[in-house]
Image (cartoon, rainbow, N blue to C red; front, side):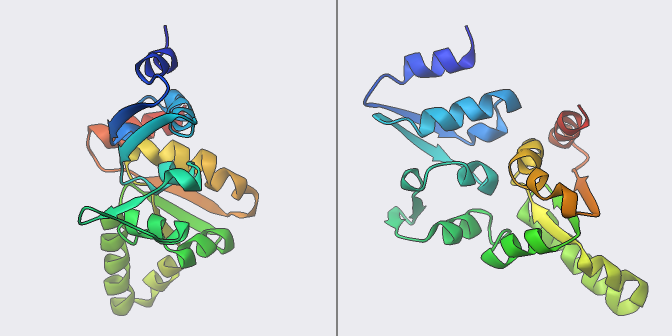
Length: 182
């Protein structure tokens, strides 16, 4: 019996399933099944996540942004930007399509710290200014790196010079690297 069967048994019509960061704790092969379940009619799911890649694969009508206990009526791109902590904006989405070099990091703070470091080093030595041409994109977690590649970057790979992934030196980073290395 696979996870898909278990999820569908547990989520009978008109049922409510609660998922806390499911894309961080589910095997990569099962993420599509989870997305399918969430997008199924007459089944209701509440999902908490920080993964803009995961949310981007859901139907618009299934995405709500909750702030201070209230649902805010926002455009999809604004929801994704807020979800990623500002890590992915409408501008950056366009940047992904226009850049030739992409560095995928785990989260928005990785992006923030790297951009700050590049800015500091570029002021000290002009050889580091070239690093500003690299689009740094947060995947949401190490476990989302392969999904980020499969669902977003693979469609642009022919026009890119470089795609690099940077993982933290921890268990999650090692697992994310192993999934990509396959």
